[in-house]
Image (cartoon, rainbow, N blue to C red; front, side):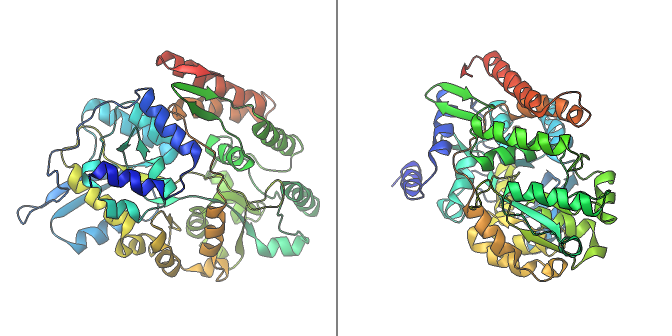
Length: 452
């Protein structure tokens, strides 16, 4: 049986969502994928061969990355990894990667989140790594994550984690103010009003004006479909009923002063958490490690709950989630993928990252989630089994969302306007509409068929 036949058979058994399958088909039909080489060190994916070690460079920002590199380097002698920490993708990391590819001096491996992968592929910035990924490795990973990294029938990245949404809250302050943990968005607003009434300086959570991805995850959770591929046409709609519901809801919270509007992970945001004037954080599974690393003095005071939903039934979008990709120009793809696979699919790789104490990654390798749970010190959350909660949230991720090939353009247009919303300079609806218009214009500029 050929590799392509095996892959097709394997996928037919996974129950892949129609939206993801449609995206893959459209990317292929629209010829978004340029022909890139797959590296030159060894087509088999092996490195070293008993001679001089192969040295590769890895750029990333995820918590625990340096500890993982150290563990990998200590585990064998065939591959040496040099790690460089770069800003998170939307904070400058993606621009740095793109510029390095254009200049011909890109590293051998980079972190790229699922939403941004199609754009890097469409720009010809990455290599097809299919020659280095075995069916065994693919079979260990969440099928939906594999589909998100498989475009036009080619493999563009090794999935690392999934990122279902979660609500983090100060259980001691919720108890002090008599606030129940909200299970619906209606209850969330009521809780926000109660928090402000109890303490005029306190707010239940923060709206991040610099981070369109958090808003997009909310729209995803509500059932929105911004991008839909049909045949050779992209259908773009950021003003569907689900998105309009989310937009109106958050506009109301901002207009009524029920949430903060600090930039994500800024000194202002961190200070409000430290002094107890922000009681909650609407984040994702990886946020557990962020809070733990940021607020060690508050150990035992935080808990995690499922994301509030519109009807009280479990539902989640995905906020981020990372992959490992090989940039165009690297001649060490085999060694890079071997390292990426070790990080994503081995107990040693997952344990090293989470034992760092700063990461709460929810592995795409489903069999390794018990390892992640064991390695994560849940004392910060009073011993709560947060990975069980992540499992439930992951199972409730809406399968009908798809990412388009111009995420950077979409997000930049939205971000440019979000910062003005809280000051009354514009509205969330206007910001989202700007993202729609910029997306349609960019797709047309690339010569693609668009409806919307």
